[in-house]
Image 1: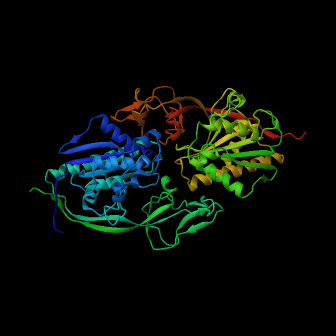
Image 2 (image 1 turned 90 degrees about the vertical axis):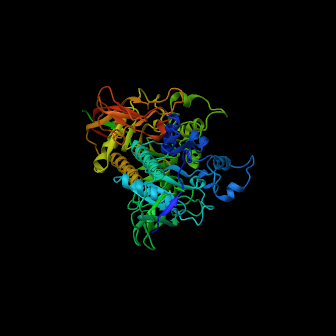
Image 3 (image 1 turned 120 degrees about the vertical axis):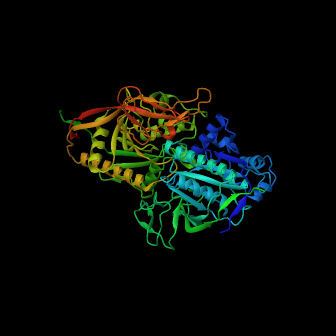
Length: 310
Length: 310
């Protein structure tokens, strides 16, 4: 593939606490703020707590999920006094880090998340974009012992992308788990910190003229979601993720494999094409009616890239 | 030791959702209620959701920790409109399951909990009482592959005991982990369900005249608690549980062993007598200023027991 050229990455935003009970990002950002980190090599760094009231309450959100508020539609609708707290905050963050889609936007927004699922270290990329994929590939080579995967939610366009990192010219989320909400584990903290350090290395090398060779990368592309079996009247679960599926994120699920166990002891099996389960039994997805996502493995060929020098 | 005789156990209460975000007990109790389980052999069974508003909100509690509201002092103070929701509920539960210390009280209250710590299946006993210890010993022999321990909080008297299970003539909590709050894992659910089934077997065997032989039992007796290092001004953590301590509940901690890692990278070591850490990095204890408890191993000699037939 032909080499592709991009402008320098001058401005990086690192957002933590977009979900207030996911503590790794909260503490990483607080540490960067305490140490007054605002420039690393050629990159200006803006560490920011995305949802301080939710962090204070140690809740995912106060009124609504902040990380669903960054579509063009939501950002272009004027806020009023009665707008949800997170919609107001999305407009503020869009001013600070964006505006989304504009020349003034951050070159890269890296948003930090935790999951209760056994996801390891996962880069979540909304729209196919070779910059986050190149960075993710680089981090993977630097952390060979960590389970690192790439999950592409496969949105049609950036305007539909609803996450905070879509406000930047480029963006991705780092999702590390398993970690319970409201808990800070050293192993998870160290894994995320190391991934951020390698991201900064990549940006500085890129800015200094390093060509990053192309190559192939296995990604997981969101196909569909599966809900828990529920009582149609009460909405309560009638089954639980099967022990053979629990913790087996990114392991191929085939027709006939057990996926749920009902409280009366019956095993429910998967029927459908072979796919990869992701975010299995994630705490925050109970209310979103998602027991797990299913994704297809797709190999992406990345072009070699380097900095535009003109 | 001489054999000790106890009256039959006619009435068992099983309480779930005392903490509304600890889902295993919530779902076990709901299932028992749906199946209209109210008698198993010689034992009448009362499955009860202890804190429905907290369960609805999927929070530990609404106003205050319900499982700290059952001291004689709190239960003897009249409630008013402005009493915390959980204090009102403690009075209701005391009427339903107690009154604490009276002849009318449930023979046994078994309260179901989860922890984010790597505790396995732990019986928590507030006041030294050989009934819960005998039951725990029996369950241990029936579930040899499960990590089962006995933790004694060592209160001076039942009147000081603040947990819901102190309302019964006998009581204990079953604490199973690790499980994130707000998540239901099949392995944890099965472990707790099996422990309850064995408890019911024990009660029925006891009532039918089986003599349970005495013997020795290793218990862990609460000695003291250790908080996270914190910033004295903001109260925020300045260190995190060390990876070498994390998940190592019930493994002997010796002077010089690492216990915390500061965000600046420094390792803090334990100083003091050899003790056993328990509830390491439990989510709900951040606000209680407890990074872990420390306990002493104590071998208890249990007398043989059987039913009083007079």
